[in-house]
Image 1: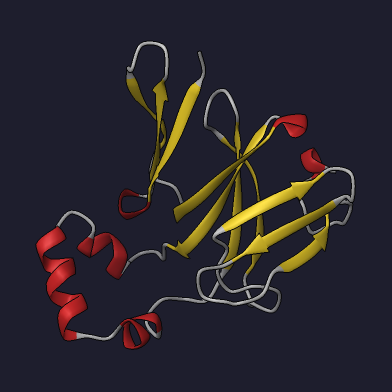
Image 2: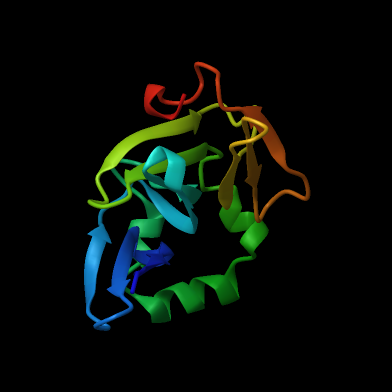
Length: 156
C-alpha cells in the first residue's frame, strides 16, 4: 500500500504511517534541524529533508520551546517573527535519510548561508542533474548541479 512520511518540525522528527494498516512509527528522531518538506529521491534511495532551521548546541531556544505549545504561542505574541529570526542561525541544510531505515546517510550544508540560508525543500531533477532548493524565507530558488563535491558521494 505504501508509507506516508510526516515531518514534525517542532519535535525535530519524522513519522512514518503505513497506509495499509494505519500503523505509525518513528522514522527519524532527534534530527539536527527542524524538518520541513520531504522529497523522496527514488533513484538515489534517500529522502531529502529540507531543514527549516538548524538546531544549535549546547542550547537551543527551539528545543526549549518545543515541549511547551502555550509558551511558543506567548512568545510569538510578544516578539515579532523578524526579531526571533535574529536569534536563529542562518544555515542552509538538507539531510539525506535512508529511504527504508530513516538513518541519516549524508547532508548538504551551507554553514555560511552563502547559497541559501534556509531550505524548505530540495528537489532533484535527474534529467538535468540539478537540485532546486526552495525556502519559506526567500522568494527565489537556489539551483545547484548534483555532480559537485558539495553533495555527499552517495548522491553523485
